[in-house]
Image (tube, rainbow, N blue to C red; front, side, top):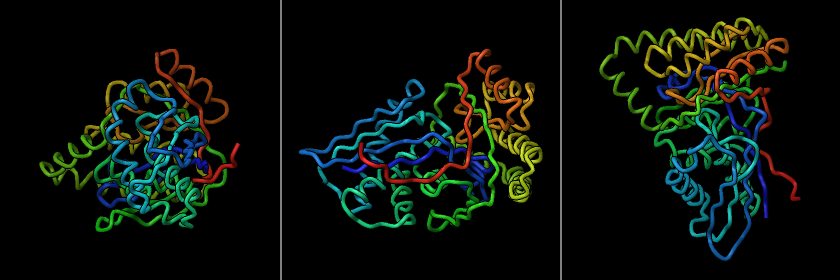
Length: 316
């Protein structure tokens, strides 16, 4: 038996833009998914992760495809294994739930079967698993779950993988996540954005250039540890995402609540059209922001970011 865990992720800057080869900045969060792999008489997949209601049912067919892709990529197709998913990371839109599960499963299989894959190869396997969920994934979710910390990511549009650079961000950052309770279909949303871009190339070209400037400045202020500037740039990134149709009334309400209660910045994260909103806070405002979200009827969670990547856990 082998057990591995991998963190969820939040995209601070660049969701959707990253699909088109633009840079993104993402971070691992301090909530993890575990994958327990043991040899068995027949193949089985058990999903015991906590979830946003309906998420696992919505993603079930994609999950089955994903795990089979992982097994094939590791030359383990047809292996009789029992894979059990658990941990405290809530399976929901926007936290890299699928990327965390793919990375954890790949690492646990690697350990159980003694394949000796390094972290880069585990990441490549996890990317294959992500294809089961997202069709043409950006690669950022599995990369963040595998490597952890803060990463600067630029996708190679030919290979589907990308350049990954760790950012020197050592001070703690605290985020409040607000959950709309709405599960988005990433594949469908990405395709809708692609079609809109084809209809309005000039509009999207201008938005893409605006975003590139935001990303470059965000990298600088992150390494300068300038939290107020990070928050300001999060607000600007959210405005661009709103302009390409990725926000929703619930997301806008959560942004309004966060900024109205002292957050330094707030934006949607992940797929959009639902899922999660993230707000950058400090010790003085984190409880106030989270409480205000709860009073408005939304689930909230305070989390620190920059967590360790995938790792093997000691057997109980």
